[in-house]
Image (cartoon, rainbow, N blue to C red; front, side):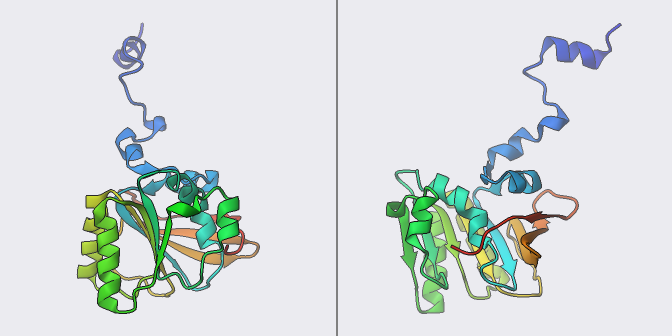
Length: 209
């Protein structure tokens, strides 16, 4: 004799959600990272939110971590990808070889701190940028909250790169820490909205592009 649950599954297989299928509401708000290892670790990048990527060493794969996502987002005809204050000029041939549309890229270097914050908030809030990659100065919590709200309003993904050691409070939806691990890069999840425990994985990420 079938149990009540088995009978429901038999009658309404398309209308019931199973736990192993993941949270459908959560998945709608995630961008496919394009890396199977990152997908297993995170599910995807949070949309309409800020992701912080911390590391003590430059060039250990932080951009390679995002490259499939940048390539996918660059195919959106009416939205841009903004690079704000990158420490080096992105290498155009490598980006193009990875499928990134260079005509959808914008690079800006505001000199004054006030202009930097205004640029980030405007780009995230406007709805014209699918993603904002930024290397901002240290931000006060109030400024962080304004930028997080701007990303939600504009449905834009902000990826903020920091070179520091000490973690601080932040309203960001996701915070990762990257560390060298032999020939790999260790990706440690320090904070993830809705997660109950930290996670980590060693990924093969080539050097910076």
